[in-house]
Length: 152
Image: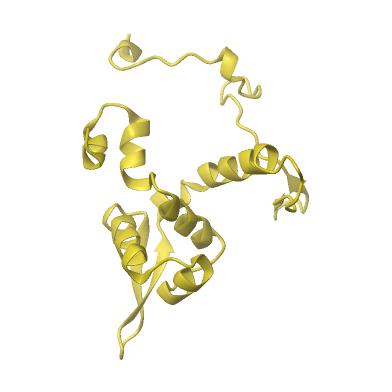
């Protein structure tokens, strides 16, 4: 199967990976959540080549994850801002960060990335919970119901 064909599969994970499934794209999105907006800033912060960055940002704009906003008329310069669809990726960034803090830092050679909830002022470790009973999600207690069986 070719990479671009993932977007045509019934699986929502495969369709998502067709857009987000490379390391640079997720790092670009991570930096956007850290208030990076301009091409040169993304390039400087990530150390990515101009060609790769251009390609990845164009894909994010094409899929309505970034909005391209003109901030300087002459010469034309643009900022890239997360759309509502892009902001909806925040739980994925949190999940990657939490997993990396726990499983990719066994020797504790790196400081743990922490998240502070602005509303209450406390540090938090985001967790997934059931939207019905509010219990913490346990993979052993979950069942995937594939389409079209989920319509029954």
